[in-house]
Length: 491
Image (tube, rainbow, N blue to C red; front, side):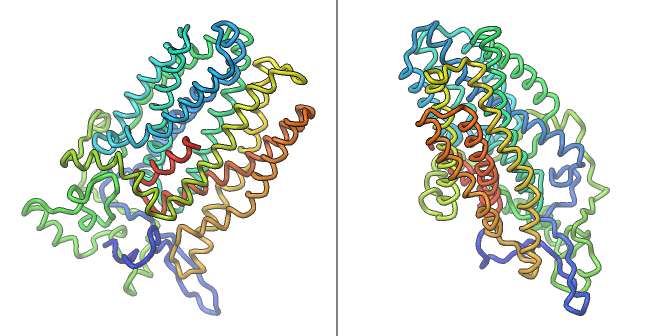
């Protein structure tokens, strides 16, 4: 039934998002058409209760907070760590660089496991690995050990971006993704900025090693929460049967082939719409239907708690499909201009943030600042405040603009509509970055640097959210998101 809501001739991600009603006298009203089209199955993640969705997404966001906290909390520890272990500034920056390199490669190497076995086992096992690495970080004594900690923690941490985006794609509709991605970016900044502030005080009060011991405690709690609370969001269906297009998670043979006689008979019966979610928008009866509401099949039983907590959900198919997801992101990156544009934009934005964080960690230990670890950590409050304000603006604005422009476009949504929201935030990002560099180079008062840092992040957070949402809407696949993640951390 998906052809009623999209057209193969349309650009990627273009769908009918609104049902337009002509009320006369040039007045029109519209109902939102749920995209992607949900099934009538109550076990379909798109049909989960609001409570289920909030719980799953909250856990995914907690995962993102902890991963980015683990990656970024190192900066306030550099001074005391270098003094105790004899690490030079060059050693510390080199270990940070190796972490950035493994962050770039982690998603293409590890996400295929989530596509094959589901995101739940990857969330759980990566949480266990991060718990072990935090204990290793707290007990490190050599430069080689610190290289290993940075390389492994970032390699596994690279999962955070694409796994969370997979969760957003599985749980939420197109008209909700702008807000959901903004929440994710805000959580990313909580981990990247507030955790740095906390790490500074912990370093001054308890010592730098306790930063990693405390991370280990939080990762231990995370392991338990994901094992007992996070449900698998992977859902494979025959899209023509259930009225929902296939996901990029599954290979074509896994979602479009009808393998037996029973499936063929069910497919034949499905040509007549039996519920509101299967109804199209091509006849007069559609005006009477509310396509914003899902009607579930009461004959389909809901899974029990232990069925939902199953650790593996294997996708059948040859290993060539598994391996394809490892090199496909690089092919997509160089062959699809939209992916390249969003990925490079995201990578540049992250490069700005990485340079700023590293510059603070190095230069503010020296005259005229002579900051302690806690003072360096407090500087991260400025970008957190800036990103929070930017997120509060762009979250509702992005979805509002998408719906507004879709209505003006006859109900047809184009992912590029979100780019209109780019323009107001670009001057803040560029101006803040320029002022930050200028103030730090001239040795101006720390307040100038903090204000510039906050202004820059007021622009950066919305731009990151918009780039993510565009990629998710236009090229709804984990390979394209891995391409973005590659540029993000390579930057």
